[in-house]
Length: 410
Ligand SMILES: Nc1ncnc2c1ncn2[C@@H]1O[C@H](COP(=O)(O)OP(=O)(O)OP(=O)(O)O)[C@@H](O)[C@H]1O
Ligand SMILES: O=C(O)[C@@H](O)C(=O)CO
Image 1 (tube, rainbow, N blue to C red):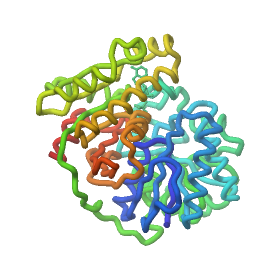
Image 2 (tube, rainbow, N blue to C red):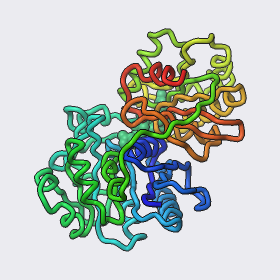
Image 3 (cartoon, rainbow, N blue to C red):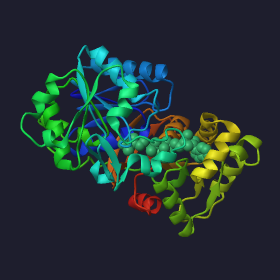
């Protein structure tokens, strides 16, 4: 194994797997802390955890266990993948996990770069932009679990990490000697990047770092350090069968995609945490709705709601509890639909995808064609046969994402 990666959520892992695969690596994505025996001959193994919003202790334990398994299997370099919008709270988990991985490796420094220009995430003077807005002025300020209200990543990570946090500005990224800078400091350096050229320079300069951290973009240049040559993702065979769209993301892009898909005439059922907890809507209702939907556009079950509505649900049920109620619902529904012969799942939201994949009993994913930047179709094998899964990060994808994903495999 050349690269061993740990991702803090499932869609983030898939995003990273796609980037590495396109850059020429054979990639195996595994779900949850793995057994070393699972890895086969892949150039890169990407472990997807559900640690982004876990407690600090849990996130650190899961990440260190995954890193230890990857190292035991021979990983030459480790990568810690988090969100391109740096989703976290003041307590963590990006800082504490990075600190723990540095301790595990016995090294003093690493870089942190969430930039993903293809999806509008850029870092300039240590400030994260989403499109043309600062992170704190983007829709991320109202995220249900990790509202991001400070765009200065040196400050954000400084609150989370025990190590010194510094900045490598764009002028240094574009100048000679970047690898010397990477290799000579203590602590964590936020690295500016505003285009793919910057990311490729960063990847090249990171060749000797034992640990690299970032969004998926900062990994783009790493496979070339191991002699990999960019190419197409391997072709996979897809199960033919029934499809469903399960949406737990409340991100702005997802809200637009839900509206667009409903306007196309897709059968759609809305759910929300309080209706689920009061029993006004049950898993049996949703199951019957999906199973009885007419042939055509796959049915949609969604809990996506405006920030005001999400805040009201959270006041009533608690922030984490509201999210978990919906996640458990989607996971249980997915398991039941599998038993009805559904084998193509389009899912929106990283936490939601983690829950659904758990409900489906999926342990590993292979990466297929790109639907939109950062979102591939993936193939998994379960005890019930092969599945096709499109796992979309909340803010990724064009407005017609759901129909586009479905048509790509039809
Ligand atoms: N109506 C709702 N009210 C409160 N919480 C909700 C509601 N609908 C969904 N949620 C919760 O909000 C969270 C959304 O997180 P998720 O990671 O799935 O989406 P996202 O943050 O948009 O995606 P990503 O992490 O990929 O950017 C989940 O825990 C989900 O259960
Ligand atoms: O980096 C991103 O934005 C995504 O891969 C992700 O992690 C969203 O959950």
